[in-house]
Image 1: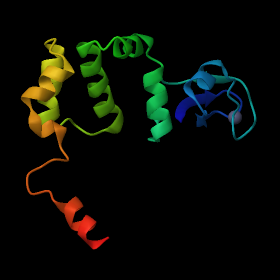
Image 2: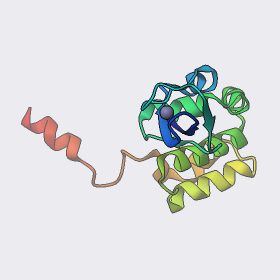
Image 3: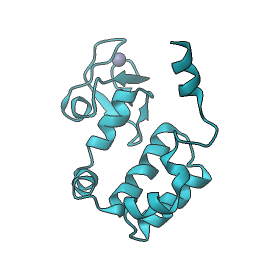
Image 4: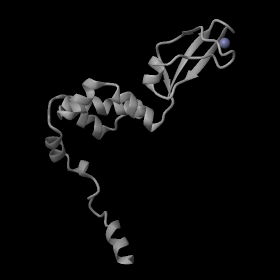
Length: 138
Ligand SMILES: [Zn+2]
């Protein structure tokens, strides 16, 4: 959910206006929550985004080049996507993922990278027989 900051000429306040989506923020008319005035000037180009899953995905869906790259399985698009994800989530890539992203950017396919980094497959870690234990109990 994007939030834009405005200056209201009627009540001379700095206000924040919430929009339900980025497209609404672009088309929609903002109204001052204090005086219902419509003479607003958008203050900053930068938007603050409330971190909801929905808005993160929406902001990424706003990038057609990225989406078409992902559809054509372009490794660089995937690398770009992973970097964006990490930025949107506010979580830096860990060492393993950084390596993956670097290699994707170098043009390696995800399959090649997965094969050379078996730990990425996860779930099948040695000694990870939790599933078996559970199975015995059932
Ligand atoms: Zn106002």
